[in-house]
Image 1 (cartoon, rainbow, N blue to C red):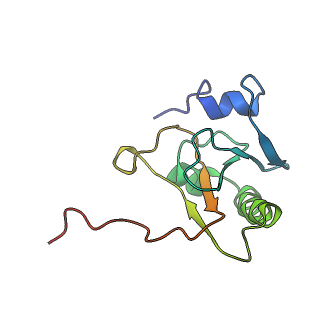
Image 2: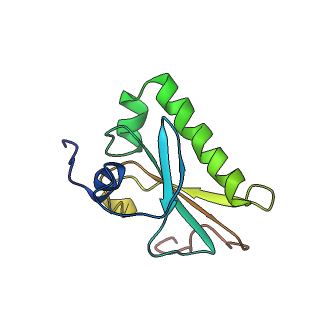
Image 3: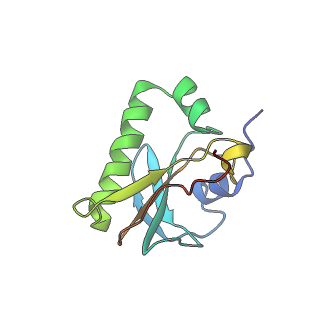
Length: 123
């Protein structure tokens, strides 16, 4: 699958679509989710053109990978959720319901988040 440079996150990176930008550095951009699922719900995206986590892990440079994950930590610190705890979520592919084909990490926090997944379809 080729990277779609017209996906919504690529357009946010190019400032073609407005976003509530909370953090930016050489490796990442963080902005508020438009449909928050917790008091704090922020998306962090790498500046490079990566479709998914697998694509990012395979093709990004060591500097990009380290810079991106340091940015995720910086965002959590800036938002004040690091001390109380937060959840990171990255969906990969159709079965995980990845909606935008640009690698991204959700940061959730600001309240107790409960269990990660419900038990469905298991014996």
